[in-house]
Length: 71
Image 1 (cartoon, helix red, strand yellow):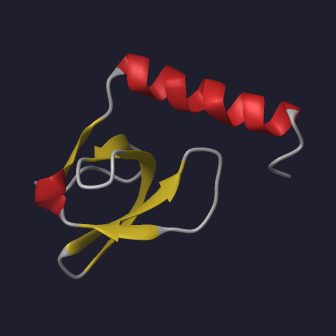
Image 2: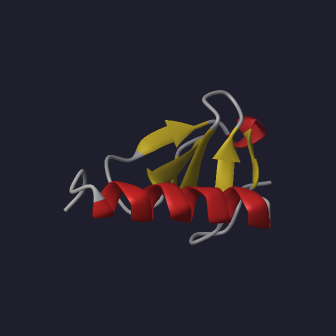
């Protein structure tokens, strides 16, 4: 099953949390929390992110912004 666009998911192969941006061929296109370069993941290696994982990603992004590491 392909996750819906806008869903927060974990790419279990890389451990990265991303937002589903689309589906291209057999892949799910993900973008990092807070933006950045998209990557492709196999649907079988993607699972829904838990609330704790989403919070951790949001906190990491907020901290990076406060340090001036992201625009």
